[in-house]
Image (cartoon, rainbow, N blue to C red; front, side, top):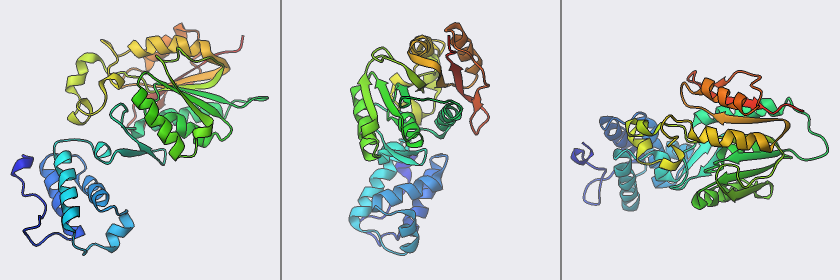
Length: 302
């Protein structure tokens, strides 16, 4: 148990060097069953000392100050209690860009980059003339998907929606920090209810975990991600049933809806898209783990 592990050095002992502190924390995290103890230890030591990887490598023998030791121990205790590193640091990288987090936002995950990849694949096949491309992100959270797409499509304008004002403020702050605030707007509403089309791309990572499965999730997810962003109802499809018809109405002819799917959900989501008069004209895109993660449907011209 974490409480039985000897903590990092305090003011009453000989102290730790950067390297020995990193090694000691790695051992403690490994003993607590943390999946990536070495990586997490490096990130936490770097954050506590406000050093990047290069600085840590060039200062391995430097002794931690008492203040650094106290700060690192506080981080260590939080991670030993299975709080995700991204929550401790308050930020996570997505699509090569830093995103600030809040209690109302999911931690962006690499799997979700599959949605960005498929959206870009579809967009690059499309010709838009006479106006700038428009993108909507339903349930934007930290704004990760929307801002990644705006970064890749420099002439596009995007709108993110969320029911949480805290999430919208977080997304707005991220847009400002990334230099994208002049091309992004944020609206408080349920799914796409307050939006008016047409949009060339509509993207979403909706809640898709069946309610009964949430207690079985890892402690990092079930106790630290907002339940509103996880709970997809009894069968996991409540959000899709709501957002797919709304998105269909707001797509431009030839525009596409791209959503993230949970494991085993892709085919059922495609069925919902077809029922909403979208054309499923390409296969779902798998993530690096082989799970069909991004599902798309296209609004055909009349």
